[in-house]
Image 1 (cartoon, rainbow, N blue to C red):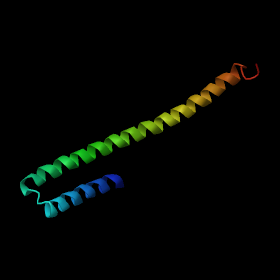
Image 2 (spheres, helix red, strand yellow; image 1 turned 180 degrees about the vertical axis):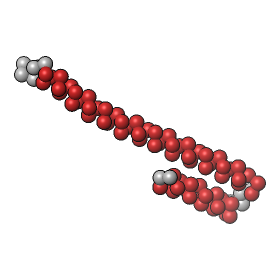
Image 3 (tube, rainbow, N blue to C red; image 1 turned 120 degrees about the vertical axis):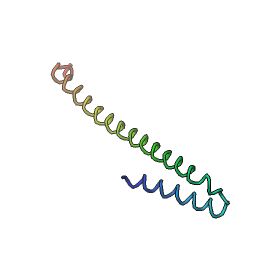
Image 4 (cartoon, rainbow, N blue to C red; image 1 turned 90 degrees about the vertical axis):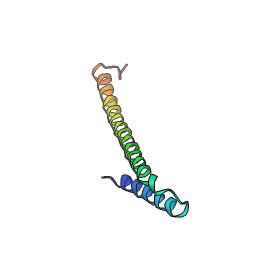
Length: 81
């Protein structure tokens, strides 16, 4: 599991502990709140990793298309015109 997901889960746990101690959060809803926040953290982290992977693919595809474009220019003698 990547570090940022563990960090986000630790932040959720710390936030619930602080709210339970200082804000007198009702213990009966703490488990439900923790479950919902954990699912939200995992879902948003997965979405972020998906966007990052697509960004890396786009960068690589852009580089390959640039090389292919230059090869077409060279092979069609448009560079010298």
